Image (cartoon, rainbow, N blue to C red):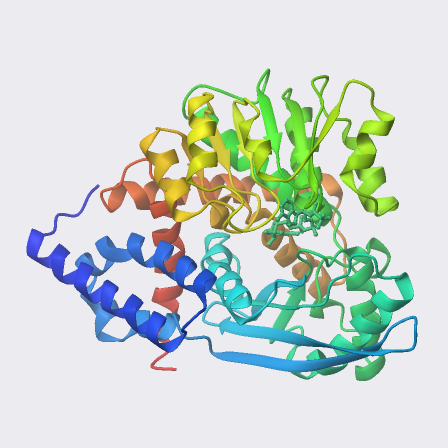
Length: 458
Ligand code: NDP
């Protein structure tokens, strides 16, 4: 059912939302990724403010764009040569209306306040979409793990946690992994937290190893969840993964398990990448070989072609989108698909795009997809499987038990279907039928806004 509003109400809502966006730019100058994430969401919310004046009266929007807390700290450590190094650590605790702050930690040289705030802001709505009791947060450091020894990674990570521990806890803020932070780093962080607190609080971090409180299927969750979500989009058009050609960017945690599930459902994945370049294998990517290279040997993706005759390696990342495919799954990093790449994908007949990474498509690229009638699964819906299973990990930790892989995977599948359905419903009810970008933004926002409304002006 679509609720009717007058043109005048719509225009007023548009002016109001725009004025909040202008204030965000003025208050956070030079934070272009944060501006981009805010704009993407705010543009979708105009129909909400046209229909629900109560949100405006209680300043929900003005409050939601301002983090509850931003923590910045020094991370000193000593490298293998005995030289003192200093990095910067961040944790943004953006919104706790629905539960403890929840969101990953990223180690990458590009990390700064803008990146952490964009990720934290997105995380609020993504977490809300899962239907679970988790608020939104994000953290990280400009530390570059590439080329560092295992000992250096440990020393840095321990120093990072020595400051971060003051601000987190199983009921207050629960970090997880993200780019550059996998099982190894989570293990070191957990060890240091436990040592400082003298307490085994399993629920303080998610993405833990299976031997000390981790959940089965957490490693797979973001990639599998993304494929489940795209599966729902395809099903609505009477299609499926069977027989489709798929291109997946990245070769990290999200990418590997998106490839694995797409292949399991009968698709042929022909390309993936890392920050150096991309591989193309017309016989279908050997996912086990990528796992070996990336999860075990920590090597570059270019190594793949030495072991797979018939495959090719091309330097540079953006060229991957010129490979013709039915389904594109960007699973590497933000803004990896610009308008030109999107136009190439559309010209080559792409049917569906599922965002495994956070904000991988620029705003202009999204326009191209929507105008081209491409099925578009936005990140905060399509990649919510990771945080959803993180919340399941917290639940298991709280109950001190472990569910089987099949149980967790089945719950993940249901959550992804629910996210798809609630996003479709919200889009329909607010006058944008079929637009999952608008629908996901509205459905996530409404859940947070309703909770903020009844908690008073805090
Ligand atoms: P990983 O560090 O495991 O993998 C990232 C991959 O992307 C690596 O292969 C990396 O290559 C590649 N990459 C990084 N920058 C670029 C670039 N500019 N161009 C091409 N490839 C690049 O991270 P994750 O898989 O965990 O995260 C990937 C994305 O998914 C991020 O946007 C993250 O925020 C998002 N995400 C992750 C979740 C999770 O559960 N892990 C949950 C939800 C979202 P290289 O090794 O050369 O750096």
